[in-house]
Image 1 (spheres, rainbow, N blue to C red):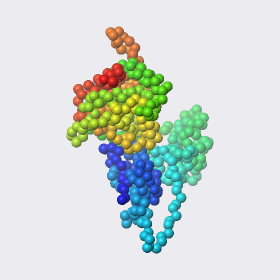
Image 2: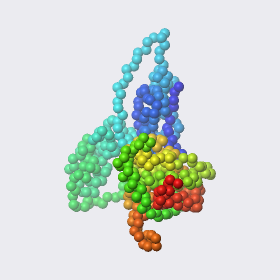
Image 3: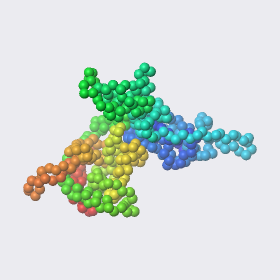
Image 4: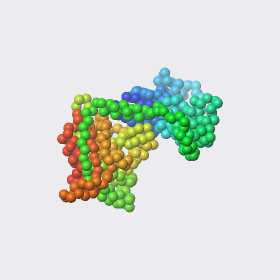
Length: 447
């Protein structure tokens, strides 16, 4: 029986998705769980797996199409199954019976491997209806600059074809007072790329014309992110709690685990290894605190509270096109090494634009850590439909009272943003108190 291929939903607020490319052609055999297509949603660009094994047929969407969630865009047929009559020509016909005249077997077209491209490059190509196969790349994967250079080549009049350049290269050349005609380009058709301009010594004189503000296109991910945070800020009654925490024992815990696991391979119960970071320890602390304070592990939906049975921690991760929040599911049940390995895998997949639908769904609480950027403290916007988000700053030495005397101690500032509809001040304060105690006394995790 035919199986529908639909536009998937990765979040409760998602209404549409944009098809970036098919990874299989009509008539190709597919296996259940095999990557079938790339889709850009309000969260990220992800590979969507085939829902069944069979033959891809009745493809009704093309790269660049924006499709409502839940709409059928193709079928997967059994090997001897025919497509519906209106699409019969697009699918294999039924096998001939023994009494019927022999039907010539069509010669399959040679398989062409899909063109490898970054998510941003694929999105820009789809928006401008470009064939990725026609875009020259310097490496094995089409990059954003390759697509922009190709667009520039198409838009230039014949008389100026010798000065093809990407928009960024033109801007940099203008800022540096360089003549593009004098720069040897390394891009498609000799187009000048940003790297070519940066590698060219620039003139000392300032350009005669001062550059004015210039609009530029943003990704769909960035636009949706802007819409979501605007809606969250406008509709969620935020309140904030701040807490300074002594990080002495957190640092000692981190150093001990790092030294221990650096010399001992992971055992069979926690497969996979990765460098343990402070984020991993904070995820564990927050997950245990949420288990002890289930009234914070909730969502405000349909004018009521929804209690989440699992503790799924989302991590805010910056990527090229905006911000994504991959999720560590059942984080309270994970050992530190397993948690660190999964966190590293999710971040790598996010930065490569290869997050799967399951990597982005089901989050019940979010952590945003900007400490690695030297930020002391900040307040984050709640990630709906979650009830709270924890913003983490850097560990910095400060003079604080210790046993009645001033002392220099490593301190960490935590900022908890809450949806007041779902969490009141007392419950939020109790939760933050537990987080602070577990950071200052990690042994209490064993209680």
